[in-house]
Length: 305
Image 1 (cartoon, rainbow, N blue to C red):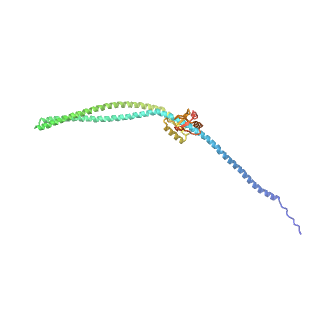
Image 2 (image 1 turned 180 degrees about the vertical axis):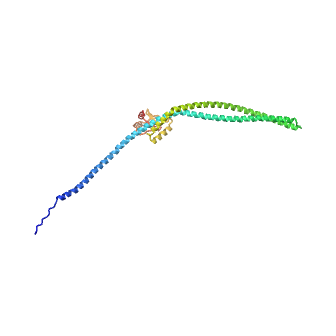
Image 3 (image 1 turned 60 degrees about the vertical axis):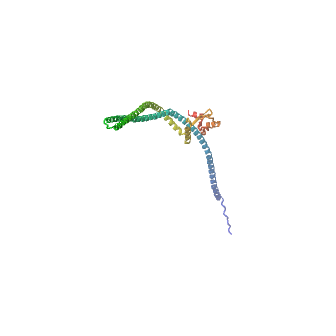
């Protein structure tokens, strides 16, 4: 019986083959670990970044509020100077307008009086014509009396002559009344014309003064208005609307006031210490609880200089 030999089991090759799958399994695991570490770092940075960003935003907000307060106070100062210019110049246009209205009224009154005098002169001329006509009729009736045939015709002509004499008296009376009224109207016209001349001279003087003031303040006013528009660029529309509304309601046109002796510079009411502290922090815009004006501290005022 032939002897059978068993083949030896090769272990080296399979062991090498077994190690490779292990390496393949370990590599993805390490890659996943590294990837997980990277993701974790990114997440950490993402959590830290918003905090830094929010802090930067807060700083920017503080600077923005402070700039807004400075711009509001600067805008108030500029608008106050414009108000002064317009107050000085504003009285003259009103005076000029009043003089123009008075002159127009005087001219209308003079024209009406002149028309009335023309009517009176026409009436006086009519009455004088009536007197002449009545005298002519009296002369005619007297001539007819010389040729009457009976007493009846004579009496009738006599009555006509008497009637014409009455007409003459009435016409002369009316003519005198019209003449008196005419003389009074002419005197009034003369006084009105003199007053009209004086008012026209005053108007020329006022207009000259107004033109001089406008020439002097026009450039300054335009520069101030330009500066005002520049300040408005730092202020949002909501604040500008509130600022305009406060200025319109305030008698002195002050919408932004400084704290003076622990009180509001507009209504002079006392401001609580906590509100004063908040105003000095420049973190938000604070208004007076009594008058609604925007309040600023010395820091904002000094920042303008």
